[in-house]
Image (cartoon, rainbow, N blue to C red; front, side, top):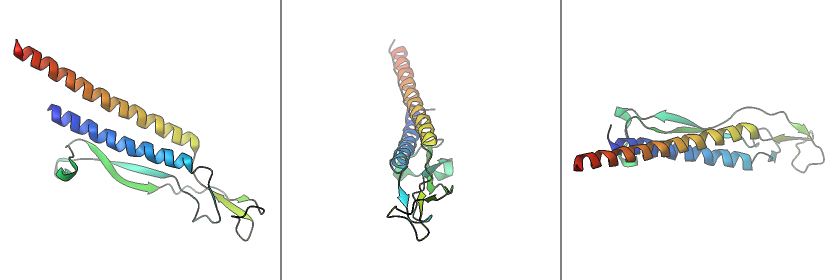
Length: 141
């Protein structure tokens, strides 16, 4: 595998994990948001990763075969029970407000996993660079 391929795969993984981190931060920021209906309640956003196969490489996006990309972003459809708060200005006609379905602990796990994956990609790039440098040193002798 060439240095260019290794860096391309690691770079794509870092890009995908950055988006995952961004969505988790957005979810945490909206964790305490209330709404007047279940449809309006904030829903946690997630990403689906997709492997880049040989026949799906998009050169315009500078993708590398064997890497990963964001396949899609979707909303978590988990329903959280309504809370009875008739004094809340957002309450519906029955006095209920609807919280977001964000689980802060799950988001912290997502952030930790994405951060570790990001760090692993950096280590893979650094290792490939060091191996290339050592190869060049051997060839010079």
